[in-house]
Length: 88
Image (cartoon, rainbow, N blue to C red; front, top):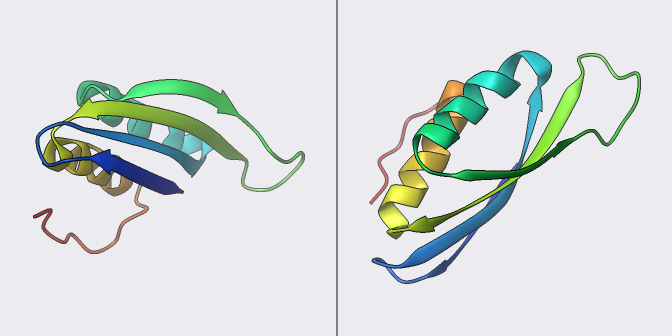
């Protein structure tokens, strides 16, 4: 799971990839879509692994803070971020 940001505080873009279990996939997608993050592709890298791991690519455009909060929200919903730290 990663995120790359470019631009400035008011006009930024984010591009990234999430790795989630099948059970985490829908809640994370819904969280990102609710925050206007576009889902580009959903796919798998492996076969027969347990638990099943799904990967998806995403991007978004907006203020750097809004984008960071959207990505953080996806991490929190998916249980991928255990400690909630403020986005500054």
